[in-house]
Structure formats: C-alpha cells, structure tokens
Length: 524
Image (cartoon, rainbow, N blue to C red; front, top):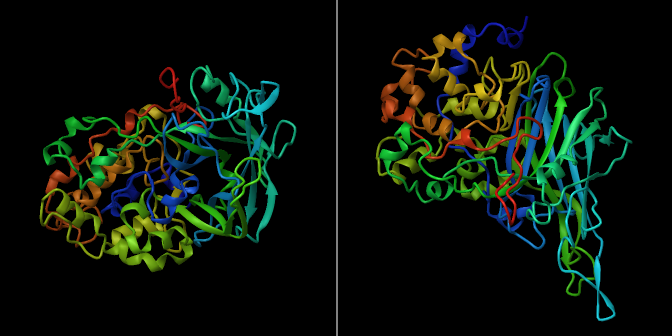
C-alpha cells in the first residue's frame, strides 16, 4: 500500500512530514498587479488559482479548479465593464507525473459579438452607447448589445503541439458557451444569482468518461486582505496584528471588488495518472506576439488593435503571490513568462527570501527575521511539495500549486481557516495529528476559505521553528529551532486584521459568490 493510500486511513506516521515542510512560507495572498508589464494588460492578469477536492455534498471525488483574472473590478465599471480579451489565450495547466511540464491544459478563448442595437432617433436608426438596452434575465437576451461567448479546448501533452479536442455541452454537443454579462445592477438584472446559474454547464471533456461542470463569469472577489495597509509597509500597530482577538479588526479593503472566474469541476480520475494521486497546477495567459494599432479603426467591437504572431506568455500563477512578494522586481516579468521546468533560475529568491527582512523594516522590529538560512524548507513548500502529503513520487523542483486527490475534502463548517498548519496548532502539535479533522487545506491545494496570509505570516516569522524546539521534534531540521526565530511564540499570533473565513461563498460549484452589483441592492 502506498504512502498516499495510507494517508487517508492512518495519519500519525506522517505527522513529522506534514510539519517538516511548514518551516516558513513567504507571505502570500492574491496576485494583483504583481509585475510591471501585467499592470499594462489587466485583462490577462491572473489573480488567484484555487484547486481543491469539492466539498459540495455528493461531489467528493471531483476536483474544482478556479482561475481568476482581471483584478480589482469596480462593480460600477460601466459602460463596457470587464469583458474578456478575444485576442488572448487563458490556460489552466495540470502536471500529473511530477516532471514540471504540462500533461493536460484547459485553454479558454473568448468572443464578444456586437449586436449594434439601434434606436430610431429623428428618422434615423442610431446605435446605442451601452452594453444593454433593457432588463436581462436569460443568456443571449435580445436586450444585450454584446453577446459574450467562449470555447474550451483540452490539450494533452505540450500546450502548443499536443493533442487538442474541444469540450462540448452535454446537452446538445455545442462547442461554444455563453458567458453571463457582468453584474451591471439590480435594475438591469433583478436576480443575478439565478441569471448566472443558467450559465453553469454539464460538459463532456475529451478523454474523460465522467461529465464535468463548467462556469465562466464574474464573481465576487473571494480573497480577503488588508491590501493597502500591507503594501504601505504594514501600516498597522504591532499590538493589533499580534492580538488574535483582533483577527477581524478592520474591513476587507477589496470586499466590494469583483473578478472573472474560469471554473471547472472534473472527476479526479480524469486529472491523475496511474497510481499517482498528486497533481500540480498553474495558470497562464498569453497574447499574440505582435499588435498594430489602426489610427482609423473600422466600425465594430474592439477594432483598434490588429494582433498576430505566436502566442507569448505574459502571466503565470501557481502558489498565491509568489511573484508579488517572493520574486525580486528585476525578475517579475521574466517569471510571468517562464515555465515551471525552468524555475532553477529563481532559486535565490526561495532559499534567501527578502520578505522577513522587509518585515523587520516595516514593523521597526530589527533582528526578528528567522536566521535558519538557506531556507531549504521553502524549497520543499514551493518547489517539491510536502513529503507524504502533496509531493509526487517523482518530482522535479518547480513552483506550482499541488493537491493530493487521495485526501478527502472536509465540509465547509469543519474547514480550518489556517489549513494544515492550523490543524497542527489546534491539536497541540504533530504528535496529535491523529485527532486532526482537516488536512485538505492549503498548501495541499487551496480552498476559498484558507487564509493564506495569516498562515504565511505565522510561518515566515519562525513560529514553527519555535515549536520545533532544540531537538528537532517536528523535523524542520536542526537549524530550525527557537534561537533561529527571534519573535518566539509571538509569531503564532500574527495576522493581517482581516478574516478570510467570513467571506461569503456558495455551498457548491462554482463556490465563489454572486458578484457585487454596480448599482442597486447589496450582493444577492
């Protein structure tokens, strides 16, 4: 019996392995505007990747993948709102054999068709200036001035040269799907939740004998963070961010923002290979290599740019916020254009992270960064996965989100907001992991409830080195000990003042909540 199959039945032998790779994570969060070039192309800016075993009743053998793009969407961002770019290629990649190369890719392409709705004005039919000309309640409503559609291809093998086939609607076999218009407001779309639900499709995925689910559309931003405060050199009193009673002390600064989600729920057997239950995932977005601007655009929709040439990757996201606070500024664009198999070029940012030292400066707490350098524990967490939990049997070091599909999901109410590290702390240490309820959370994949900021703050400042003791009780390594973590037990109390666990979510697919409307009542 494999280590992974034993994991679902017998936890204690893996206790040290679970804890060992948690020595320190770089502070992570949602990836918004993380690199110089991507700030100029927000339509292809990947913000979050969620990958988890579905916890909706009756769906526990399915994996949910959610790739978010277009950060910080203001709900009132009319009249064009946040349509996806038809000149872009959006992808979710799966590595199911640990070689840091994609074995399966979901490729999303978009089309925005202008209907040129016109009104009779003084004997002339004049096109309207808005996305809508009346109330909308159904896909392809006659009142929509722009119909948004998309297609999804599955590519097996290399993303450009592999075997390609179309995902089709289980009801009728269509290869083109309707995308809901963004949540303009409650007068235009009185019941957005019901309207969006009409765009959830049962689909047939080539090479998979179990129907999957598919949804692409605007969602409420599911990530909670004290964003402005963090990037203003953590502009908060130490007494606040080290007091667990104040974990929800300030408003979530991006609570009113929306994102665009590409969500797939697919049976785990369609993603894994052989007896290996661990899969890795990352998202990318690519643009055509060349673009010409027409000084006299023809009539139509988005006609100014004429794009052509090879696809060129400009966005990449696996583990949350690696590019934002781990990769140094000179290499951020390079990282967004890179592939996991080439991640050795970024090794110094992982083994010798700068963020703990920046926290010393930001919090005016000199000599508080952990001293166990180089941080080989980061290599485990970011680049290989945790042995016995989400590390493949054969692995090439590379940055991606990894999930062990053999570890069963946990109902939402029982999920520990601090993921696996929270369970270690809750049960009093790895020696008591047999009492753990939830081992299905970050960094074993990532669920919407997982508070990746607080998890990482605890770890990056050495909390688990304190717990490791001088005798390497948790297996972090002999250099990971209390004397290497100057903050001591205070590290366990660190948080950003915003509670991820209270963000509204749906109980099932597509999990992320109804987007905030541009006008009218609060989100439904």
